[in-house]
Image 1 (cartoon, rainbow, N blue to C red):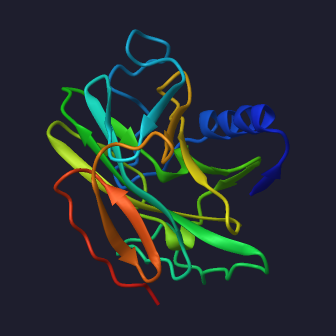
Image 2 (cartoon, helix red, strand yellow):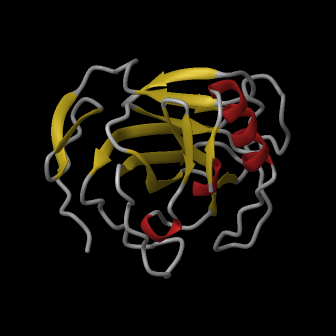
Length: 207
């Protein structure tokens, strides 16, 4: 789904999508956060977070370890869809985000890649299911999930990652412009990114 409007209307449109999604995870459970409700203390409000910085959300936490353009995007081991990937059109490029979600709370934490979107200037893109994964699932206490999220949009833009799960009343923006201290590491041919301190990762391109 592609939406091209002004930025404020884009965010409203993305929220409408995210709040209407009920992820179908491996456990078949309902969407729910650490409290099972929205708008409670600590689970509301728009925030801007640096790449490599961890944000606490109730009993859970989210870290975007990298956000970059990817001429040859990496393919996750478990994709959300087994359909044939779509090639970018002229003037388009892929953007990939490496996200870790952890749950330290007593209640299950729902994680769904569909709750993320990528903003490139005044253009917002939802994920490419054939190049993103793993599928949605609920995390129990003391477990984590690493997501590889792929988006397609205009080439040469500065991407920011938007996160708005149904159990959070607001939009969390992960921006390279608010960069956490780290190291520069190559994740894909021709692309470099800044990761959290002490993180070193090299990934080969997918097919």
